[in-house]
Image (tube, helix red, strand yellow):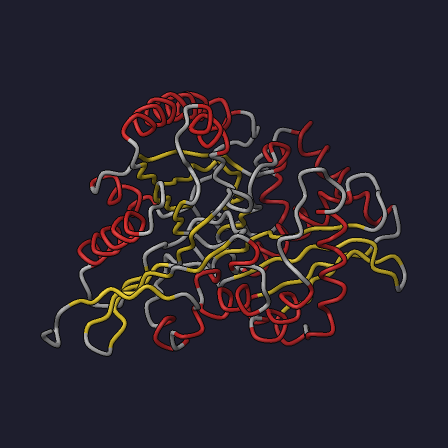
Length: 390
């Protein structure tokens, strides 16, 4: 084989790929979740492994000894922890006698955040190598008798490229807070009418009235010793609801608070010396990603203060451009988070199921596009003129 020929290798453990080689593929459209250390922590600590229904099948493209493209990928036996909900498709397939699982997903486990799904080395032809990865994913899925391939939360340009390679594109909606360059928190509040502005101020004031002090620790102010608290906060939410799942374990939190803490923030709500609530966020220089929240005591507006208002103030002070609060949460709309379209791409091999899913996705996407103006109007926010970035 010529030295410049591309070779696809399917990797069943990301730890076999050197961290430096993997991270050299990251660009500005990537999130911290695409980093080798985050993905490796999920596998090393037993969260995204075969025993939990995530069979690593990472797609890597090599030119000689050089890694030139990669995509984190997993064979799945269910759809838990993906946040692009296809359970209805699986149920319809089952009723029709069509096998839906296992399937192949190109995704970051348990992480509904848009970012590159195909990582390509600088200077390489992104479109060509992305198509090569798609071809590799389809060939792998067919060879291993998987029903379909799904790329979850790709960038819009990746979704368009996948569509040109035969995928259907599904739309979703999340709610994100954007910073056009606010001078301070009052400048943000000024975008609301007086009634809504007073509501937000009243809710934010509740923390002080309850004797609660909010603060954020990040980077070197964190250590593995904080893992027990982070895990307790996580469990306090996932164990509370019927749909909650313990996807992560304390070892994962210990790992990221050791190896990944330059990207981690821990918001704490304290009353005296006691932590009564908190949130674990992941940050880049331009983005904040709300990940896990929990509380040990229920207080009015505590969730909004820990998860939204405090971190919005921090984003303004630090010049962070976007705060993504995660999946769901229509209550975010009235608190400064605006609707943002997300994408996923799907190749379904069974012709009849593919046709039925395409018809559903078409109707769903049309409904989302039609609803976006009213979703935006529901924020109650006046348009903001762009300001110079600090």
